[in-house]
Amino acid sequence: MPVLDATEANVARDAVLSGWVSQGPQVLAFEQEFAALVGAPYACAVSNCTTALHLALLAVGIQPGDEVITASHSFIASANSIRYCGATPVFVDIDPATYNLDPDRVAEAITERTRAILAVHQMGMPCDLPALTALAKRHGIVLIEDAACAAGSQININGTWDAIGKPHGEIACFSFHPRKVITTGEGGMLTTASADFAQKFKLSRQHGMSVPDTVRHGSPQVIFEDYLSVGFNYRMTDMQAAIGRKQLERLPDIILRRRPLAARYADLLGNIEGLILPFEPKWARSNWQSYCVRLPDRVDQKAVMQSLLDQGIATRRGIMCAHREAPYRDEPLRHSLKESEHAQDHAILLPIYAQMTDDDLVRVADAVRAEING
Image (cartoon, rainbow, N blue to C red; front, top):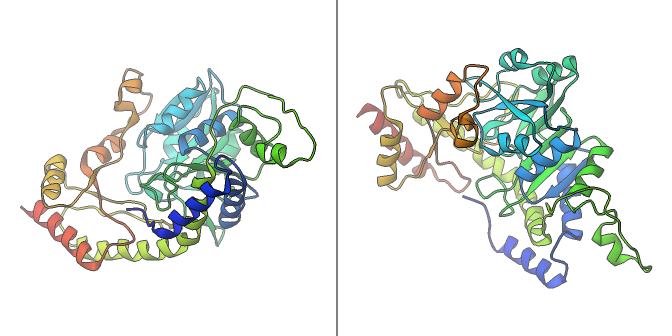
């Protein structure tokens, strides 16, 4: 449930009345504020995280014939963005404790055609960036972070807590979809330490236009723009950016609310036999975008979800596996994905949102306990 009120409505209204409704001054301010928040030299706002992933892969030079290692156990956009470039997604299995890429499996999957690792911070839980960055460096390939769910998450690197989005790999990509911790309705962001990549993002998101609208319209001289490459219409609107700026102000408080909710769930659910709770490594601080529990194998996932729904408790299935969907189903798998498949088939995402009360949490926990014990 997004944390939105009249504050966001009013700034969106102000953007509408300003007369600048497409990519303009609000977008620029949102980029600057997001970059400052995560500790990145550059940020670029786009229409959604899928377009962010596409631009990231294009910027690092992914092309037909290349291979990109990623998780099947992720929203299908991760795999699709690789296909948009004509490249091949190579699916590897997850660590069943964190639901993130298993670095050992990634190492096994690297070939002479591997050009990048697309690592997902699944459900907001940081993946093992030190291991993955070391792998990428050793093999001369790039690391892109699919941080769609991870705004506000942190990782401890050499004793320092860094925000996800501070450059560790080459590029990180975020989503502001309504299911994320902060939202602009739709929207995405790329962060990077590379001025060259940042320039590529900003050209490509606006059809390769050499002069931004903000510069052209603000100039006292007539300027004719050029189109330097085949680009895309991946722009964010100023209404979205105005909302995003207010959401950024809320983000620290939202995280402060969500982390105790996850801790309380752990207290309430910890004594249910056979139920596996989420695991947060000591070096990670999740934003708890989702709270994923693994049901005992003897329990029917769909039946539990239906029973909870009948009681007014909405859940979601464990994260999908792209290799089971039509666009990827017929491609031969090079590696076992048994942990990914088991997670999809036996995990459910329980409700977690900043406005939840303790009574809400107890009600959900009691219902889950009754289903498993029943």
